[in-house]
Length: 245
Image (tube, rainbow, N blue to C red; front, side):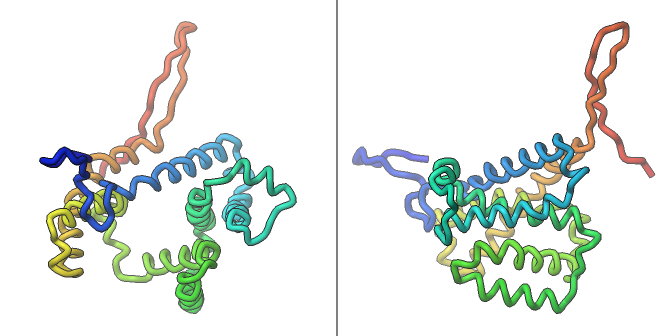
């Protein structure tokens, strides 16, 4: 968003905020997330998810090995070939590692045990690794255990009955915070800025869930049925409905 000053100098609407020039800086991760979903679609088409789900356990470690090579922790024998194909995608590899750790946890959720002792160990590993270069290799496993433990052990696991606002908070918090910074709200102090940011973002997240996200999720079990009456082929979209009680 740009404009012109009285002196003819081009200026940006967000040129004087702590994160200038970006109205919604959180959106850049959605491209990487979409690629991960496309990869899951490919796994489903190839029947890997059904026939060899154990392979999902290997995806995140393989990605982190590629990431280690990207940061030159070691060099593959085919280094030139690798750099030519994957140079510049280290951010995607790092985020995809978290994605597929989560996918593995979901596939094997009946075998994952939330032990308090292991939680403490993973918290310690997260705290020790976070300020170091090892964070990108340790946190996909350690922190990905900490979050589910907190989600299921803290007394907030029934909060989802009001709706899942996490995605809306993620998408809309950034532009809300940018606009609040633009009008000088950070001068109120951190807690005032945080409180107003949450208060202003929650209604947007609420609308996002009930108007867009929940309706889209209702289509995830949709099936395309192919019928051939009288030798003619037609397609019908069948959306299963929940039983009404």
